[in-house]
Length: 350
Image: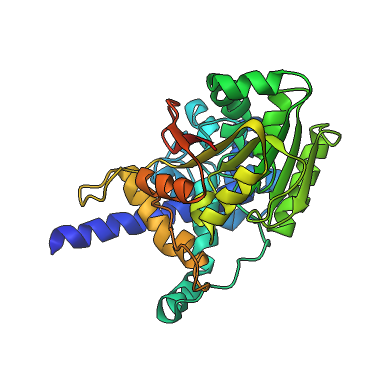
């Protein structure tokens, strides 16, 4: 009993850490400390246009929990200078770095908003109302990872796909469930002749994707549309990607079937999804526990409501992916030898 109480207390402290990281990420406190150097509460408030008293409380909590340092804990409250460690800048302040993890706080705060609706979903079996785009949109979990690895490491390691993406005539790629477009942008940046068509059901995400592509000067080769991934699209594509999205889809077999029908001769479907254990276990890894938790509060509830939903949830094991791909008509399912802590990659062939 005491051990469980202690565990829940530690979990509460961890949740509060995330909530305060959310505040620091949203208000640019970490970025400002990284760019402008150590600051008192007054200086940080002036630099960020925020309230000094609230900033002081945030800084004291951050130092008390070890996320920031303070030069002299014994100094007066307004005299203490707080700093971010150099080694922590990629994690807390640099959204372009693959180690950036502050997005977790954004996602958890976003999920917390829908918890009362999730409770209702448990009672009714219906999906909770979609979360609105405001105030922060989606947390861009894989932005830095896609830009650093998708086109530079992962695709080059898949020889048949890499060869086609480098060949003439320029390859056509369909990026299903493209979100805010970073996977599409990463592929088009790495392979400078290909054309990428991103598709997503979320109109706000598609609007953001268009802005992101334009900002990267890719508007002539990368386009986005609001579309249902379960409906095939022309022209035939040399590569179809479904990246960290299949487990969220209500009808994953139909989506995979549509992807297969969209392939040009010799084309491949590339799927990336959660890396979890092959079988259920009560001795779960931290990674499995994380995915299980997200599945309960977000991924599975959002796929409910349709009596024909596959109701996959985030814990989509290899056997489930194989079954979906086989049912969709694929003859070859390759588990790719690409190392990533979070994702497992598959190549599907008709």
